[in-house]
Image (tube, rainbow, N blue to C red; front, side, top):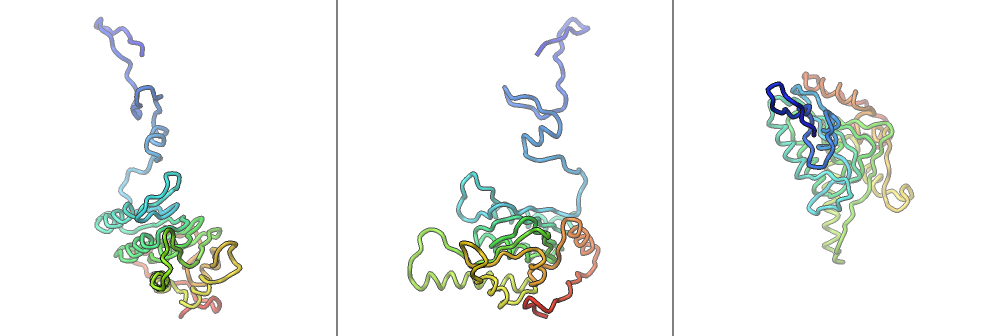
Length: 259
């Protein structure tokens, strides 16, 4: 960097603008571009929002660390955020954005139970996909919305790694599957029989048993409450924060729904 001659006979270094300070040998990137490069984040409003937005994307990581090339959501990161949001006096509601392929069953159920046990209003929006263990997370909120183009894959649970071929192994898997079925049916309007029919259907998926449910079908079955997006979710959440009662959509005669 060149030095310029000062009025007092000394030398004054050029003053760099307010930028993200680079490491030695790295170029200087000012403003928002520097934030994107250094933190992977864009500039956000500086005010104190009353709605906390949480994203659950990629694969839900449980007790085992997934390969570094996998995009994951770690449950040990999500659970403290939910606790902090519950304790915060400024946060009045939570918006959960869901786009996941599924993942660890117990980690997914832990996140779902945390969301369901919050005392503050919660709205879930499924965009892209809410597959596998993402289904219980999607229905855990006070109100659930799915995008028209989004899908939810419902299938039996799987087990990776060493499997001991004894009856107890299969009984354990069946009990865990029943836990997931009970959670989904108790937090949505779909019946247990309808959910199991979707779970064990053959011929729908190429290499697996189960069903890929689209946006409108998810609402028709009673799995989700409404087809919509971010605007509908924020409108619903703001209404719930203001004290408005959640109006459930009218039941339809098809889809095996409970009254």
